[in-house]
Amino acid sequence: MKINTIVKNGITKKIIQYELLGFGVVEILLLLDEIIDLPHRCGGPATLINWPECLLEAFYVLILCVFVVLATWQCLRRIKYLEGFLRVCAFCKRVRVGNEWVPIEQYIQENSEAEFSHGLCSQCMKKHYGVETED
Image 1 (tube, rainbow, N blue to C red):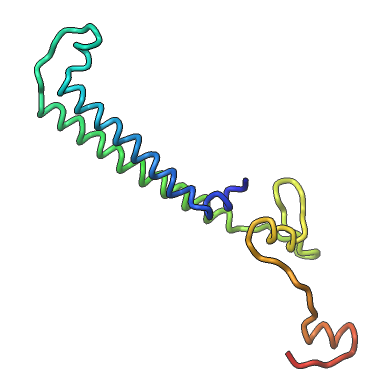
Image 2 (tube, rainbow, N blue to C red; image 1 turned 120 degrees about the vertical axis):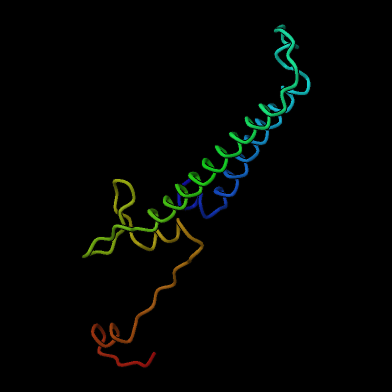
């Protein structure tokens, strides 16, 4: 699946949601660590609840979450922008996809919902067939 198709299909929103879910799990684990003393349950020494430390750690994770989500969103926006550039042959109007050149109609059909129906504009009708038409 091509990147521009992936971005168009809403994968950006899903990626951000998964990141937020992951950071939410980390926040919950931090709270559980203080409340039920996870290291003690795993065989370590018992510790007292330290709410200021827990809240500070949760704040750090929240700040990290904001930076990661913003950076991800910005990178995905940039990918979508860069995918918008097409290298088109100046003569035959084929589009470069990877290492091959494909007809522009094929490229658009494979990367969008557009369908093609060919016709002739009035200028081409006059030039090639000598027929003048009105559009």
